[in-house]
Image (cartoon, rainbow, N blue to C red; front, side, top):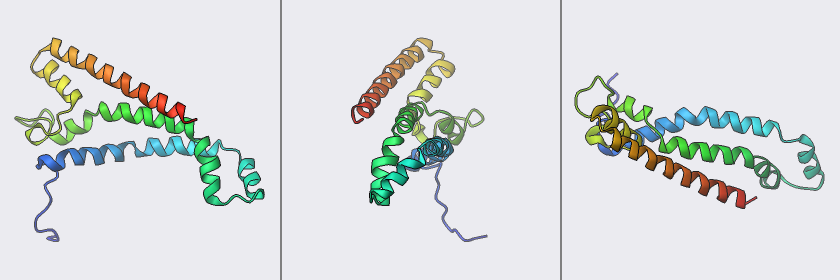
Length: 159
């Protein structure tokens, strides 16, 4: 239509590539987050809100005193799963970076999307250095274990 004279090169710029992957990953996981939170909201008894309303609590007070504490298990689950998913992102980087049909780089311009999982893929399946890929996978396991433990302790401590 000729509306844009200089289109933004989202996938050709090393600075914009990883940002595009992040936006795509958030959009990809949004439905799951909404579904889990909706299920949690439907499990909150209406009597709690009615009792709070009789006691004179406003909407904001009900949200912070009833809704957020009742959604704590769902938020804990979503934060832990989101952390694991964010560290293990591969498909979005591989698809947006060109994949196997493109010659040269597969993980964005100048490999700007190279995170630990694409590194494991490259070492193991392209360079055939299975030992290095296995070592990186163990490092990924330890990182995820530490992050999950920290998230779990932090979220359980605030209960």
